[in-house]
Image (cartoon, rainbow, N blue to C red; front, side, top):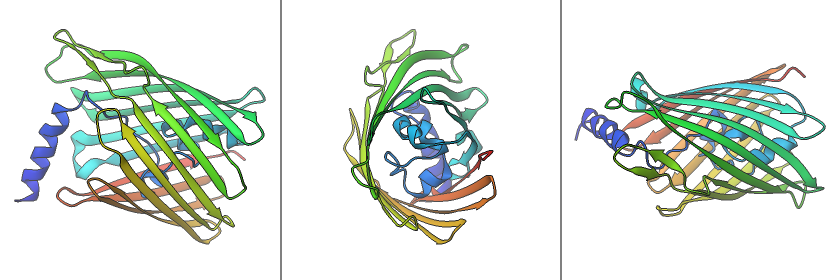
Length: 272
């Protein structure tokens, strides 16, 4: 079958399940690692595991854009702000998926804190809204996320995260749609800050377990090469990152066997 057929099928399938299970993530670095990112800490931890925000020492701001399969209607734009303080680390995140009358928004406010020497925990409150072509008004609901990180050694970090544990969802006039809970558990190992290997399992309350893995290699001090694989269905990812002074840029590509490539890019700024 031709690619346009698969794209058309994906479009209508996405609309059909739009209110079901999507909790979109941000950051091209994470995508290049197949989103095996629940234990990794950076500006985009507001979309993965807010507990890892407590490991950040400086203010950080990021913007992100992804074009799923090159389709404008599937565009995803996001931003993240991380502010460490003496009381703990605060995070503010936002994304918009879709365009025109077909779009979804999520606004998150996170707080992370180191509770013990090797243990961090966090909570994030989310406001989600959705507008469909057939609805005159948007529908919205509130939920939250919780996360934890344990670092037993300098090289090993373990992470756990739960999204929407209360299964809140959209209250349509016809019926109320409960969104599933999403559980993520993973770890990564760092080899002298030049190589990072990450693995993760993800389980949605109404779907099978998904395995993810990623590899990050830094041949130069400011250059990173990344690769990832996840399934099922199997998806391959790759990307690179470059840092120049206070600005870092990451690009990533994911590949679907029928729909083709999805490019993404993110830019992060740290004043220090």
